[in-house]
Length: 448
Image 1 (tube, helix red, strand yellow):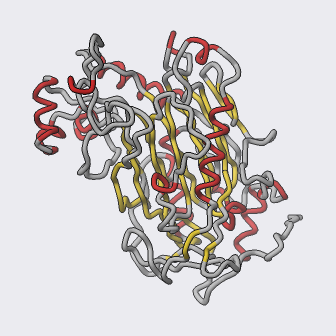
Image 2 (cartoon, rainbow, N blue to C red; image 1 turned 30 degrees about the vertical axis):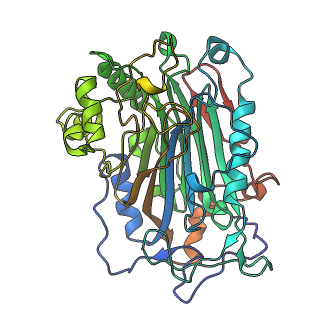
């Protein structure tokens, strides 16, 4: 016998098409994208026969904040593009939330700064804003909008909840969803892999989060790979990435007989939708002087032809073969003088007597993805001067499988206990719970 506890509003409010708020159903007769190769293919094929497809908007961003503690009055609205008010899911990856000194790498109390970043994100996402025009979205894609009025004369009240937030030394990955979607997020798990000092400490490595949204599995990976622009440093980055893909694992949960397609994926590439972001640290394989000259000319084509990561994505046998990245049309995001638009190493900004380390500009901060059902609609950078990196942002239209009718939700309750855990703490932050799972092969990873 299956017991279910209803939320105050019942199952969910539906439109005439039977879709939940904020989602645009795909036509049942429209062709579906090919199922992803690997562990997700069998599950996708089975679900296609009994599910409909909903579309959500996902915002993913990476930012190396350079060990700078965020000011209490820091406004993240521009970075998170909250003025459009059109995203359903936010995936935010930060690197160097604490300076990578020995005390922070080896010490135990590092999550205070991470908690402050989460509070600033919560404040920005849940700040009321002017209601958007019906059917309007920031990326030009039409999608039904269900505004919630707060009685303040045309303001839209936002409600975003934190699914999970995890910090490993300086790497922080935090995922937020609209409040009305939170109860459809199940089986959150975290895996931490350290690739830093001695190959295990968390000054370099990755924090990965996975969960199910309705009947689709997601995995988000926030990386900070080996630095350096010398010959041979690219090999260290490739080795770090390979280790992260090999060592990251999530708990296996056996599926019920009524829901064989909802078995939990074990590895990163087993999931239906995967996004990998972070300070990947790949450089441009050109002399520094020529790189700077080409940057001044905005000759992105020549620079990208020599971009190390593009080679790893496109070449046979590359570390990221099979992954995708959007077209880069913005300036390199590293390395800047703080509080300046000048790249590091500019003589006019160096103080007299200083010997500045030379850092050729590079696109260190990137967002990659793989899996059917992901379509990138935006790829750009934000102009915050807080650190020596610029944030990079990507927006996606995401296809999510959902049951055709309420009767088929029986598999949902058989596969996962449904209770009050969906509500989360009162302040909107949802952390890993006692019965959720964290796997780690890194030292000193913490929940924040």
